[in-house]
Length: 312
Image 1 (spheres, rainbow, N blue to C red):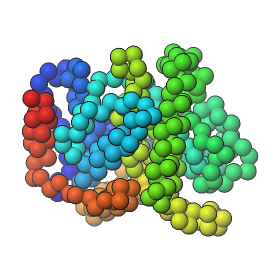
Image 2: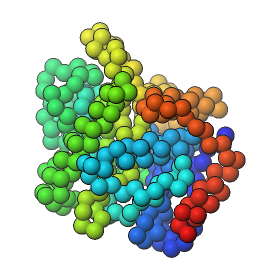
Image 3: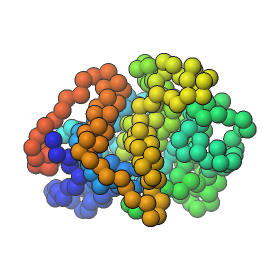
Image 4: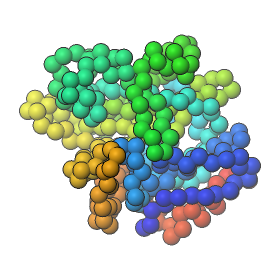
């Protein structure tokens, strides 16, 4: 199946379109149509090949978790007229991403290993090891980057000083972030998983803070398998993960970390197929359901028809 890596729809009432790293968001004024494409990014770089079924999986996982957290905070989702599409209310987004970490790993571990003991204004204790659980989850926000730019760490104090959120708004963002992470942790535990870290995006709709975009997907989150975690941690062994980290590791093993002058390694059909199969494994373990492949020959035509039918 061919991956969908670009869209150019023109829906009724369309006021504009934003092409993100992975998602294309069509502005219909009071509504947004978000298409989860099959593009894949790592180190804030969009890779040259799309991954079949990836957009469908991310969209369906996000919709499931949005529905499972409506009692915590309102969210933007109205409907999912297509497996790769979410339609939601328009929100004025905060220009930050709320990253919450329950364990020391990934970029935080790489910084810690280099001697860093403070991330985004949060002080880290001495003597921690890779994949060790924090006493309590920590929030390490970043700025929200445009395509071609890198997200940058930012502290709560900087967010307030730059007026990116008011003190009252930021307090609610923190409250929602920790509550959503707790709910995600509980749901993951039911699937034999540990929610390690994740990110949330928020915006305002009619003066109220809403959760936006995706939630608890393998692209925005990192999961460990709970079984064997303690044994692997005690032995200093890598954890078995459910996340996009395997893509980052493949890139790093081939000399790419998104730095200037580095070239993305060749994404052969075998590499692309392997990444797609790993995403299907992620979906099925995370949801407990068999992934239903939508094998339409023209994904763009199907999406356009389904969205147009919904908008009638």
